[in-house]
Amino acid sequence: MPLIAHSQSMPFEAPLPLQSGTAIRDYALSYETYGTLNDDRSNAVLICHALNASHHVAGVYEGQPRSEGWWDNMIGPGKPVDTDRFFVIGVNNLGSCFGSTGPMHVNPDTGRVYGADFPVVTVEDWVDAQARLLDALGIRQLAAVMGGSLGGMQALCWSLRYPERVRHAVVVASAPNLNAENIAFNEVARRAIVTDPDFHGGHFYAQGVVPKRGLRIARMIGHITYLSDDVMNEKFGRQLREGIALKGAPGGSEHTPAPSVGAYRYSTQDIEFQIESYLRYQGDKFSEYFDANTYLLITRALDYFDPARAHGGSLQKALAQTQARFLLVSFTTDWRFAPARSREIVQALLDNKRAVSYAEIDAPHGHDAFLLDDARYLNVVRAYFERIAAEGAAA
View 1 (cartoon, rainbow, N blue to C red):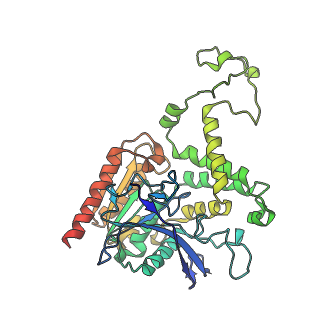
View 2: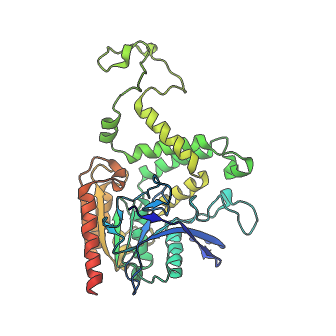
């Protein structure tokens, strides 16, 4: 029997102060819960999502069998984060496009759709909004906060911003900040969107159009960075699409002598290699469901996150205020959030004499490994949450 998910929405009238110095009022957060909150409300686990995910973390929607949550292999009855033991909460971040108030919604101060006027949001702002949701649910302290990639940054931020409210922080495939290369990838993707003729300065809603070309390119750029070179070569290599042959190269076989450069045809409409087909499929699909202004907001939040900045660049000093115990997981082929970045966090925690467990998984899947079924990875998380459950039972 699959876990049945139910999307909910929580409205908030009181203004939420933002790191930019502004505030947002009359907003709503979409969320889902799985499992049962125990009598002393001590078994709550908050799951923080990455760039293009949502509050739909686990289970399926009734009557929609192919609607699995984005971390359904991780969360559910008998799974590593066992909803028979834990009360799991997934929240869609403020500014996202999956139900929570974002650029597509109406600004109560103007009566018009926010569009490009939606306020800048940061990881800290998301954590503050999540804390308000937990307050409304009557949850004072989390058994754990967990996330991968950008979600891992939020988990780390929780341990800093509300240290007394987090017993465990699980940070997967993440980093204490973005390096210059990651910021560069984000900027190229953003430029693809803002230079799309249909972007209209972020007010494309009023024009009845969507900057799909920019969204497609942004997604293609991002997807390349989520996969490892090994996986891309194994899945696609230099394979041509079925039925496609280069002009002058009968059959398109790798064993066919290479034709001269002039023998190759070129058209912006041609999709000849399998990897091209795959990337365009991913880009097309993304452009149908994701909001362009949300993409700009979330990638900026990624760029801005840097808890060490307020401490002269010292991550050790930044993490000195943490009280939680930590599990960090990284993957050897993840070059977007390399293991060395997780080890920076581990070292800073050890320097502060914090309890920390670290697993570096030798997996071929690149950054996407945190979403996939690797038995070693899932078993590490399972063992850690079994310890948390045992700790709760003994309390």
